[in-house]
Image 1 (cartoon, one colour):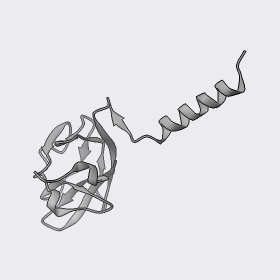
Image 2 (cartoon, one colour):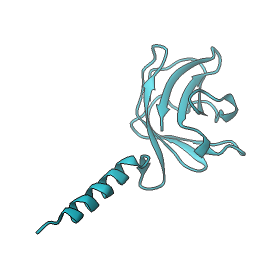
Image 3 (tube, helix red, strand yellow):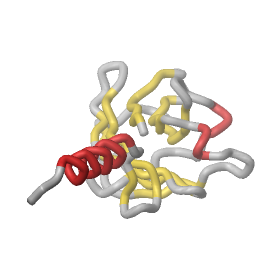
Length: 123
């Protein structure tokens, strides 16, 4: 027989799990890209302690001078990790020394030449 206490215990466990941030295999935070300024940017990204990993489903329609960076409710230029290595598929970017990825809630694909966003993933 199921008691009221066991039902409440299960409800608390489910609500606690639902409130936790998204993790991939318990290693990092995951986000999904949306395009910006008319660009198509899709796929997932994982932020680890020392790197940003664009996952295999990443795609970008192309633009001049795309770079990878972090942001906290907006792009932060001091977090630039270099040029986008490929417009599709998995690639890895080292987070600059002195930057704590836990202080950021977004990953940006940013056009440095024209100072415009190309894609953002909320973590």
